[in-house]
Image (cartoon, rainbow, N blue to C red):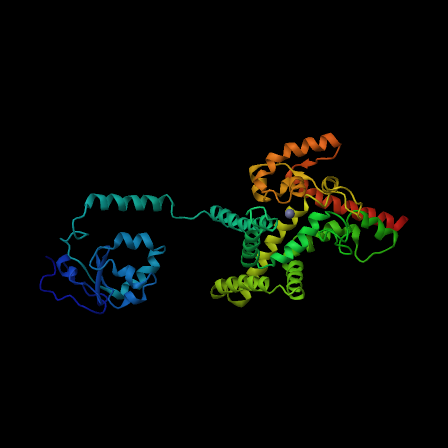
Length: 417
Ligand SMILES: [Zn+2]
């Protein structure tokens, strides 16, 4: 037993420069009481009785290693060992006597040694270094899942999940209000008009965007009437500035608030308020007021990009104009195209790539679109209707192309007609 007869100091640190007192395990074992805890790390003995309360991982956690060798736990939990050792220094009261084993109790010394060698090998192989790409991908995935809640509330809005409409509406209020901060009523008010009369001016709110953008027939009309509120021949460029970045952040926010107040949708207002309460309470402690506002804007801008590109790729490049009083199938097909299905596209767009099927059968659960698609195709073939399907990237580029085309038509009419 080393250090026999040496009274081990109970409190305070070892004197710098002085030889450290030595302890046996028998002496250390006594210090595993509430308010009296010693532990051993790398053969050094520390008195953590008082300091345990300040341990960032909690006093219980560090206290669980009272009177034990905590070397492996110390290495396992702490990222920057040199930084943590600075906190240990004032707690040092001695070291294990030379003839004492590194660990007390019925331990397999060979296993302890081999495990430490393995830990070191893992360190040497840099296995504790995180890959930024991996976690960036993970973050991207989480943000993409955010977009998925738009898809889910869309399913619920169409009452396509539960047999009883009531449950769809209750669930939609939660998803749209609590997860997205918007009004389910407002969404349905807009979106059902879009479904009823897709790409028809003053009936479909999605294409009633003049005088900011000129789509379809409005470009000739504006040109002929010499209206030039904006440089419409450049609309495919300013689209990138005010379209994808700002739709949900500015347009949807303002429209939602106005809708809820004017239409007295108090329940929706409470749901939306619950989103803001959750968001700001969650992040205020970490980022402060300016930080959390910036974060909110960043999230909205990001989701807005997803929203614009995914929801417009199926409609903007198609026929857009005034009411023609066509039958349901013809009017939906004239205004809608599909995007080639793939596991990724189906997931990323929330099956909105099957837009034709969605528009013909808005209440159909979207996992069944691929099953009805061949039947729709043969109906189109039989009646000479266009069933247009394009690759994903082409569909995105076509949004910009159609904006440019409308802009050019406007300019031509403006200058020459
Ligand atoms: Zn829809």
